[in-house]
Every structure is written in structure tokens, then in C-alpha cells.
Image (cartoon, rainbow, N blue to C red; front, side, top):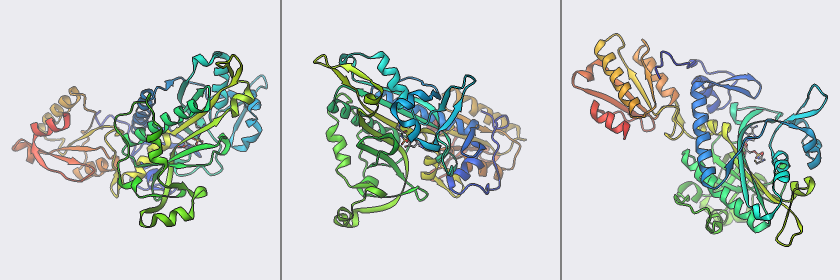
Length: 437
Ligand code: 5CA
């Protein structure tokens, strides 16, 4: 993509309404624009990152044996009356009446909807287990939407739902999601800590939150230092094998959110205790028959008797993750994207657009990188070098390939790695080989 043609409305000034660094940088880098409180439009650069995060989430869900579906955003209120949550949910639920005076709502989550689909479609325990997910916009009329996409009112969530005939089988689904979550966040370059948590309005008795540590996190958390220092996620997982020992390896280590902390355990840990602030990027729940009993979702069990389905639900904040990755990875100059989610891999900077040699060289490099399948943002604007460097640092692409007339005379370019700031000069062919490897 040529920057001269790209829609990238960057801001020089720091917007006054943005209190945290990710919100400031997302506005300054032209990634999003607010539509109304807690509701955002995604502009080209931000949308590319959102899609990359969504892709990683999808690939890891698929690898764990979860099947993708798509449920609507607007749901009938009657389903929520069956589960009893229509009244319980309170003012966070956006309630709508259609032209026939039917009560509808913009879904804050989909337990009722999926239970309804399942109860009409599956009749026997032989059709179980099943794990289904979708990636869809949600609406929660938060009292205090803030921090940009981190606590929005409209936000993109991946929510999965498991259906099993008994509790041991349901826990296998829970464990699959537990491990899939660790892998998902690791691929985004995040250090994530699973913590025992309360279930809140989703219900149930077993639940873990997945938090990343950042100063701007909304809750105080405490955990064993190993979560931060050690790489605990195995690269090869057999999802059909026994995952319990892997999950135990994490849950045995101390990690707790504010309301679950245990002073005596923390004392024992001594120097190994870390107290920090966390951002919740995922939350998983086992809630047994809470929805299946109230909504009549039963299958014929092995003995022929009606058995209420054992269920769990598993959420990831896809749009929140865009902000969370920035909170975890930035410096004074701007964003530092991990390659896996970066909107483009390479920024190509032509430092002198009125020099025919530079233009020809850059056009050639651009064509070569693109034909090798590398995503490039080509700064071909007639701007000063200082402006180009500042913009590239702000939008945080992992690599900058800098082409100027002086280097070209000897056939060299500069390759800057955004993360380290190192900017070695090298022959053009070496640079191309490195960036296309
Ligand atoms: N039904 C369950 C699991 S599918 C559920 O709704 N869980 S949740 O309430 O914990 O939400 C799942 C994830 O969505 C959270 O971990 C968080 O990352 C994200 N999320 C929740 N509320 C917001 C919000 N207001 N803005 C952005 N992301 C949010």
C-alpha cells in the first residue's frame, strides 16, 4: 500500500479525552475514531490489526476442535426470560422494541441463543461433545465506558460454548479452552496469567480470568513470579490427550485477582510474589446445567433418561486485545507491534521523492517485497525525512526499510528494527533477503 493513497489520519496533538497510552496511540495513529461514548469506527490501519488478532483467535479455536458459527447481534427477549437473565442483567442490557412491539435486545453474550439452537438440534448423548464459537459484536451499556476500545459499549468478542453429557467431559472442554487461550495470547506476544475468578452474571462455580500485566490495568492482582519469568506454554499440544496435568501446572501456582487473594499463601511466597495491575483479555466459565435446566436443553443419556446438558462458556475480548497489545508494547515514540498482529510487516521509506534514482529503487523494492508476499506500507509522500521517521515510529511497524540517495550510491539501505531501535546499513540484496525470509 502506498501511503500517499492510504487513509491514515494521524494526529500530531495528543487527544485530551484519552487517559491511557493505548487509547492515545490508537487515536494518534489513525486506527479508530469514536462515534459515541464507548462506540468506535475502525479505520484501515486499526482494522488490519483487529483482523490479525481475530485470525489468531480463530486459528487456535479451530486447532482445539472448536467449530465456528455466527449468531446474530439482535436477540429476542423471550429467550432471556426463560433463563431468568432478562431481569437480572439490569441497565447494562440495551433493550429494543421492534415495529410489532416485540421485545428484543442487543446481545451482551450468547448463552441463551446457543442453548436454544442446541436444544432443538441435538437429542442424544451420542452427538456429544460439541464445542462451538463465534466472533461477533456485543453491546453492554457500561456505566463508565473508558480507555477507548478497552472498555467499550460495543466490542468484538470471541465466545465459545461447550456441550457435554457429564461433568468430567465438560472439564475436558474447559481444559481445551484453557490451553488454547494460553497459546492464543502467547502468539500475540503477550504474557498472560490465568487466575481463579468469580463467575458474576454468567454463573457457575469454576472460572478463570486471563490477565496481562500493565500499569493501567483495572484490577490489582497477585501472582507467582514464574508466570512472568518462565515460558510455560508448550508448543505442541494433543487436544485429544489428557490436558489435566498441563492445566494443573498453571493452576497449582499462586495467582489471584483482588477478591480471591490469600494473605497466608502470599506470605509463604516471599520474594516470588508479584503484585501488579492486570487487564482481563479472556474469561472462561464452567456453569454445569444453569442454562440447560432453565431452558429445557436435555439429551437422552446412555440409560435413555433425559439428561440436562453440562455447559461452559469461554470469552476473549478481541477488540480489547488491540489496546492490550499496545499497553504491553510501546515506547515514547509510539506503538511497537509484534509481527504476528502488525498491520504491515515493513514500512518502506523513500527519503527523497524528488530524486529519480530513489523513486526507481523504492518502486522496485516495493514490487519485489509484494511479490514475495510481504505486507508493505510504502511512504512515497513528498514529506521531510523527520516527518516520515516520526510517523513510522508512531504506527509501529516491526521493520523500516530506509532508502536515501547517499546509501543508494553504494547500493546500501538502512533496516531499522522498531523493537530494538537498531538500524544497520546493509546491501539492498541482504535487506531484501532478510525481510522476505
Ligand atoms: N459469556 C461469557 C464468556 S463467552 C462472557 O461474556 N464473558 S465476559 O463477560 O468475561 O467477557 C469476555 C471477554 O470480553 C472479557 O474477558 C473481556 O476481554 C471482553 N470484554 C468484556 N467487556 C468488555 C468491554 N466492555 N469492552 C471490551 N471488551 C470487553
